[in-house]
Image (cartoon, rainbow, N blue to C red; front, side, top):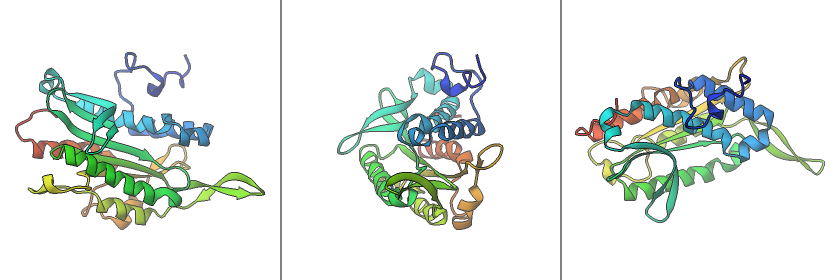
Amino acid sequence: MTERDSSPFNASEASRPLTEPTLEDVLRDMKMQYDKDPVKAVRGQGFIKMLHLYIADDLRSRLTDVARRQGVQVKEEAKIFGSHKPKDADVAVIHPDNGVLMSVGVRSQMTSVGNNVLEYYQGIIGECISLQDRFPMAVYGYAYLHPKLSKKWRTVNGEKVLGDEYPDHPRYSRMYSAISGRDGTQYKDIRGIYDQFAYLVVDFENDPLPAIRDDIVHGSVPLDERDMQISTFVDRLVATFKKRNIWLDYFN
């Protein structure tokens, strides 16, 4: 078996290795898939599902024995009923009797970021509102990935080709910060604001491994104003859950 064949992202659930991949592993494999076929990576689900799996496995590793005995599970692509229609949550923590405890959305935009970012922004707010209407006490998170240098479809000599695009990361950082931070005693009455947000600006051109450029995000949204690092994302979700549910010993 080759090194590539033994990647944790090619393994079935039953054969998944005991040692979970690091975030660096995830980004390396995402870069390999994108470099191999950018169009397929963007249009298919395999690319972003690597990040789904990383977040889901991190949450699974934090479940206590109490949670596992009660049947609490971390599920990927879980179908959840929102206020108006079902929603496939990318990652969800679900209690068998009491429903959704946590829901996490995960998205990447690798091409034509500027053309689509506002439409997607409205969509993730609407998604949040729909689920919060039905499960107001659940914890909601979102992880959003943009490349430092993206690609944009252009028409050249009658043919569509991919060219370079420079996303406005400072603006997007402020946008995502504005829909993060649902807290306080009145949190159950707040809609359209996520409890925690992770905004990843990734330099896939960095050698030898892709680099997360938190410094770009911090330039517009200082860390002491809002933490949007992927490295602290699951910790922040768990901390919010514990604060909100002080009687439940479900997470380490």
